[in-house]
Amino acid sequence: MRLLLAEDEAALATWLVRALAQSGFRVDWVDDGRMVRRSLRATRYDALILDLGLPGLDGREVLADLREAGERLPVLVLTARDSLMERVGSLMEGADDFLAKPFELAELEARLLALLRRARGGDHPRFACGPLHYDPGSRQFTLAHEPLALTPREHAVLRVLIQHSGEPLSKLEILERVFSDEQDVQPDAVEVLVHRLRKRLQDSPVQIRTLRGLGYLLEARPATGAA
Ligand code: CA
Image (tube, rainbow, N blue to C red):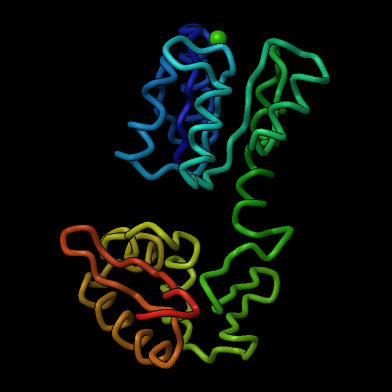
């Protein structure tokens, strides 16, 4: 689990990076709000821990900026300003959860895990690309409300793509997410699976585009108008 921590209190950040690492999280730390977008562009994180009082760009602005850009990364807001209005304000602005300082490590971890579970669809079906939907509860894909028959590997690749729809994923990134526990799988296996998925999706507006140098992108053509 890879996390980005945006926090300007060095002592707190150093402690968090170390403590969370012991719990199996890999944490990168930035101490300036302006670094957040840049880091998110460079690395794919599972969640962001965001302090509201940040130099450079205030945490609130960082959050508004991310949501405006369509970034769906789960965000846990840290705030020293423990007022109800502040909390409600943060949640309205797109934070997924908040935690008032000072906090216990155990509570931070519990909230992070809940956040990651939710992001993966523990509570609500939230993955869609045009008429293609994925319900994480039933682990079922539907295309225009009809169940889509897939092999387990096709299913795994399509799941990774729909979880990241709108952003390209390289062969290697797909490989790591689909076959993480198998050692002898070559990147070409991803190519084969994408080819098969394209056939399954060929009569629908949903397509897997190849972006040269970037990878595969799941997207839906607009319902009307030219393709
Ligand atoms: Ca701060």
